[in-house]
Amino acid sequence: MKLRKGDEVKIVKGKEAGKTGKITRVLTKEHKVLVEGLNQYKRHVKARMQGQQSEIVTITKPLPVANVALLCPKCKEQTRIGYRTGGEEKVRICRKCEGEV
Image (cartoon, rainbow, N blue to C red; front, side, top):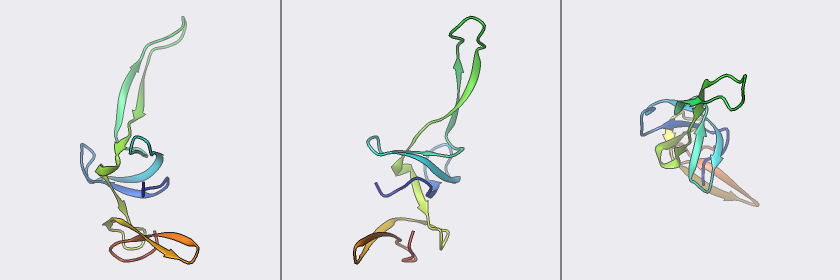
């Protein structure tokens, strides 16, 4: 997977389309990402023990990787990711401005 924790992404599809945020967690096996403050839902949690309060909890659900696109930190545009191998390192690059991501 080409996206990493801390990358700035733009949501391309879904109810949050057009919004941007940072990736907080990457779920590689499921091909999904958690984006900070986006795709949030309310869940009603019932009290488990006597004296405990029932509450409404806000949870962030993961988004499929296909529904998000990376924002290049240099050109600030929605882009795809490429790789350049220079010597011993493998570096991620922006496909539009060829800058290092």
